[in-house]
Length: 114
Length: 111
Image 1 (cartoon, one colour):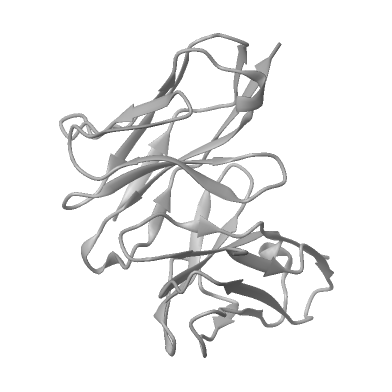
Image 2 (tube, one colour):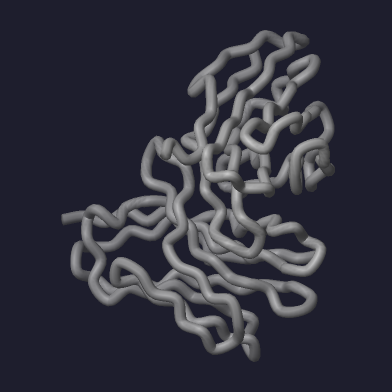
């Protein structure tokens, strides 16, 4: 079945540091890939997405590129801020008869210190 | 436009009690979902619906039931609550192929 694996966390960084959170996936066909963010006490919200190979999703300084050859969708940001502290989830939607269902990674807790 | 709303926000149940978690959306989305979030485990799909009157099981449906009588509402019923159902529950909706919109969650504790 479909699966998503994220790098082990938590991740602790200083403000303005470079961020990478690794995400790899297993899926049949050509899934859409997503990064969702969950701020403390809130629900999940979409951070960025990519729907086909080599697409780059970007939002709020975050970027991720859909790499079919390595089945990866790593999240990056050049300079993190304290306000980026949150839990980040990589997810896929397999399309077709999956009816939009999302398969999530386990989440990565990011803490950014001033 | 309220998006996806969930009630209650918090609830404590005793073992064997029952309850219904409410979910509503005002975006006219056909697809709705219930996920549970356990610490360090990501989100798991409990049930989903592709339209009024149509529901199906997800990855972890045991101990839960759903109904979808209208496009807007998708309640989740817990029968005979067990400690293993202690979790945070999220409802979500989407237009097919588009972004999931999540509610704020219900934190449930079963003692």
